[in-house]
Image (cartoon, rainbow, N blue to C red; front, side, top):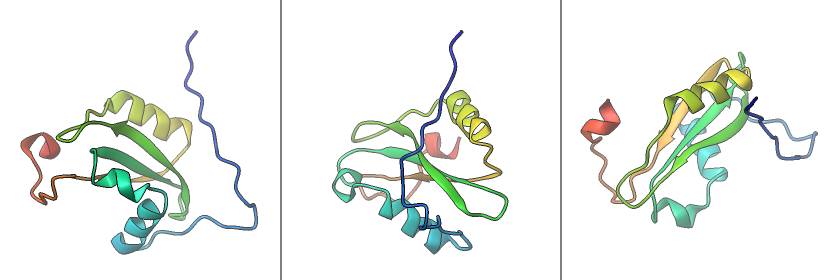
Length: 108
């Protein structure tokens, strides 16, 4: 039977993952975990997984697409959130075009 497995990067146990209490802090976490060069090249959809104290448990790349779009399978996204036992999520999507207005697809 197929099963989704999550893997965790080894990190220094003395370093605590940040607690997110503002959109600016969430932005900093996602930017620290991103390759800056790729943000202007292709569209990405990433998710911060958080526990009940808003401490970041990890960053999940739900989708990486082309220049003008990316597709997220909501079933895989929810499966990952549940498997990680995350109690909160913050989603991020970049627009390499620099257009800040969300598309109809983004709104849906």
